[in-house]
Amino acid sequence: GQQVMQIPQYQHVQEGEDFTTYCNSSTTLSNIQWYKQRPGGHPVFLIQLVKSGEVKKQKRLTFQFGEAKKNSSLHITATQTTDVGTYFCAGSNSSGSARQLTFGSGTQLTVLP
Amino acid sequence: EAGVAQSPRYKIIEKRQSVAFWCNPISGHATLYWYQQILGQGPKLLIQFQNNGVVDDSQLPKDRFSAERLKGVDSTLKIQPAKLEDSAVYLCASSQRLAFQETQYFGPGTRLLVL
Image 1 (cartoon, rainbow over the protein chains, first blue to last red):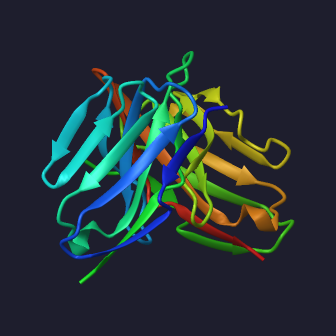
Image 2 (cartoon, helix red, strand yellow):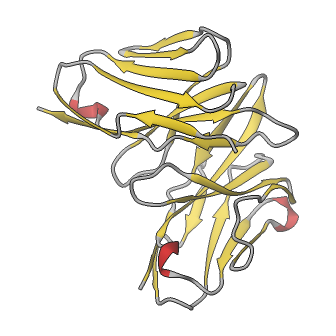
């Protein structure tokens, strides 16, 4: 079955430093989504990437989808304490009628003030 | 707009007991998902409904887990009997396809501890 790997598992940064998490799928994806889960909370949708090589920005967050549509990255510029949480990528291959998302294991970000 | 509602928020049971979780999706969302999230891992899809029909239940341990979505709205997930390894957060999500995007909205989850 489809597998989605995410690295690193944990990342501690000083406030103001940059942060990047990487996502790699074992199969070609039709789209990839990114979610953020605050400690004790539930996943919240951030963005969806669909096109090969697509880059999207949300303020300090930059999302990329690889040319082969098998990998993706999330980069946060100048982290803030509000960025704390676990970031998950979730890939979909939309096979058949099931639009199933396979989540990565997440990257837990800690921002030290 | 009201979000996805789940109850109970917390549940502690002993192994071999039964437990049931309830989910009320966002109004109008045809697709409903149940996920299991073990501490330190990403959510794992257990079952996906489209209206009141099952679309995917390939990862549902059917010997002990069951789910239903009567009338295509609310859903319940049951575990009978529970095992220690079932301790996790059970997340319900719903979605509605708009254009080329289908965003999943998650509920707060039910935290299950099996002793």
